[in-house]
Length: 181
Ligand SMILES: [Zn+2]
Image (cartoon, rainbow, N blue to C red; front, top):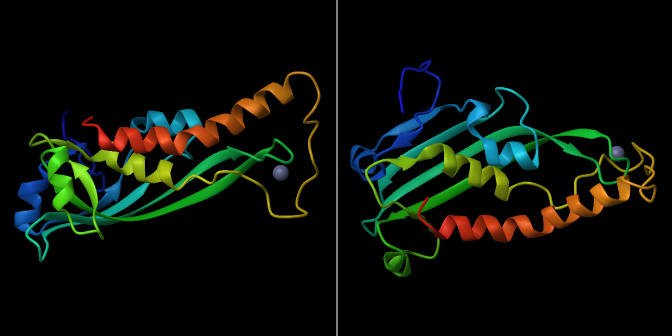
């Protein structure tokens, strides 16, 4: 991937172990066009994803990544079916491992990040963290909207599909996190 981007853009891939040894910090935006999985579930408000990451070798000798991500998405309110804007905030502390088996040795405070090459997909990591922070049920504030016509033909179907997607998603995401991308 070309890294000819504005200086505020995060690189698509990084060498996690190298950055950890260097004690590097990264912060910047991710172009929302790169976040296609998130875009399928919740359209991303343009240019609104920002992440900060610190790479270092922790006390136990693991390469760690500590970071936060903030993004704004557009969701359908489950009460009125209208649009609502939701800010997603995620914080994470990850321990980079080269193999699934190595994750067993990680301190409990660290979530494993499977890194099986010198170029790890930073955009996918950020996208995972945003997906994990999606609300299970999106609603406008109480009293701010009226129930929509949930049981009319068509809308009921889409509503049920939306709920199922919301229910299934966290597990699918966890599965993806366990697998090498
Ligand atoms: Zn609403």
